[in-house]
Amino acid sequence: MRGSSRNAAAVAVFLAAIAVVICVTYFSRDPVAVFQSAAIPAGWILIAVGSALDVWAILCIRRGVAGRIDPLLACIVRSGPYQYIRHPVYLGMLMILAGVALRLGSWPGVAAVVLVFLPSVILRAHLEETALQKRFGSAWNDYRLQTGFLLPRIHRGKP
Image: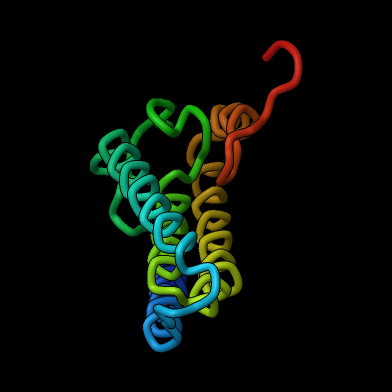
């Protein structure tokens, strides 16, 4: 029961953060804002790259995407974007939400992505990583040391 209530709370926080970002973005859009000529194409690029990253990650993890904190798969997925970062779906979602905010000219929306959605992503990802550590032990530790959290890890010298 404790695990299911933790999962429900994490999902609620995550969905609430998405709702806040969407509302702030929608109600603060300003199509005549300064730098809009650069923000519109940048927004479209973020939306396209974030969407492609999400599709790529979901195709690699397949049935492991269920909105749960506890892992559904019997192994650690190390293919596709997961060979570089541990949470590519969240990175894609961040890019999409930031892109929509930029596309609509909502600087408060961009701020909401960073100040509201990003912390909810980090919280949820840490809960998932705790569950993955319990399930996979040292294999998870090895994978965690080889990959970045939301951005690829830069290796210096020989890997």
